[in-house]
Length: 237
Image 1: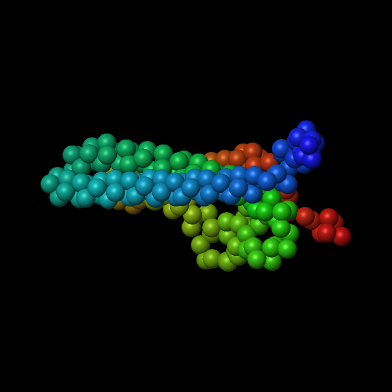
Image 2 (image 1 turned 60 degrees about the horizontal axis):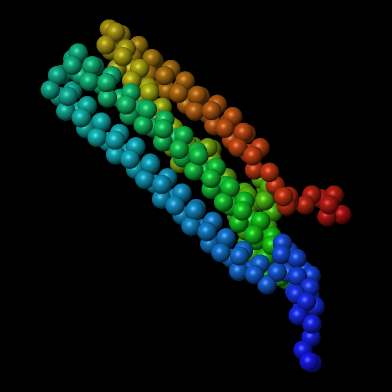
């Protein structure tokens, strides 16, 4: 008869609400989600490496095959026909690789955004731990860049050509130039004319990749709606 009213205990336990960080299961749920996002990032890295390796292997095999055919045909019509059948397939594989690598990068940005939000929750639970975090607690563009690249360093080569999609796009554009150059030889162009044709095809291909990447990045960036943006100087004041 000295036991308290069970209904009173139920109300007290639920007073904090099931959707608040004060919930006794909040930290466990956040930690589980954090590890889930880490696993998703790891799978993305694995697929990106596999895709790039497949493209490089296909390109290497194509170069060896072309060298053997060129030796057998002395760069005659048979070589031109074989190259114009094989190289477009390699170019398409490179194009598909660039598109998929870009998708993986966007997915990775989404996972990092989720991890930044979880980190924000961690610091709401224990604000005194903020000096020990090297990544960001904010989920806007600035916060994502801080978590992905903790300190930006200037490089001789623009960052767009250092990333995996940029490298594959550049190599694939060389393949486009080779296709145009071989086509020029088949049409009876001189060596200089074929080289010029190949250079134009290379520039058009790299420009197409750059234009597509700019539009795609802008479209995907708009989908990353921040909930915890980085404070501005006005907010700090």
